[in-house]
Length: 219
Ligand SMILES: C[S@@+](CC[C@H](N)C(=O)[O-])C[C@H]1O[C@@H](n2cnc3c(N)ncnc32)[C@H](O)[C@@H]1O
Image (cartoon, rainbow, N blue to C red; front, side, top):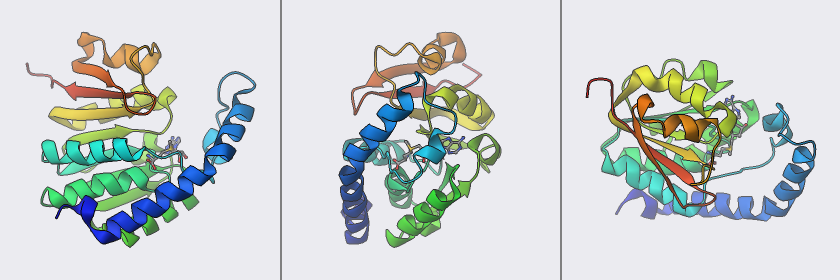
């Protein structure tokens, strides 16, 4: 049995996806209001503090598959929210023989709930959810990083990846939510530029998920 079939994991993920689905009309209304002025305001994490905004079940399974495929031992997550993606990633680590997810969440209450949800899924030994601004809390991920999930707002993706570059192992996979094939924002431009030593493409999951492999500095 893999951990995605573990009854505890299934029960928690089903509950969280159900609760998140029920929030969707309210999320759409709130986000439309915030976007009325053009760009999202800087305090959007606080304004959306009650909402999951999680990866889809399909993306979650892909996260699990990626952790298993590269036999990851250390995974970093920018934007943990209530811990949905964290559970998929930590499940992959447990089934790969162990390891640690370093999560990050700006809103303290959300980080606390994420830790509780991960513990309810029986995965507390595989996750360290750090509360505060990821630009500080991810400065030292504690070792070589095999997989990164970027899901804390695309405006900060370049900065977070650049922060993590010295820690990425050759062949590390960086997944970024909400980056479609036609995206021309700062992150897609940066990560698709061969000079920055990634090979990158957008996979059509949800609104698009950028899948990038770090080539390292030596080849
Ligand atoms: C889209 S949600 C993440 C969803 C999560 N990955 C999941 O699948 O459940 C984005 C989260 O990033 C958090 N966030 C935004 N800016 C951040 C920052 N600078 N540092 C840490 N977390 C941040 C927000 O508070 C929000 O909870």
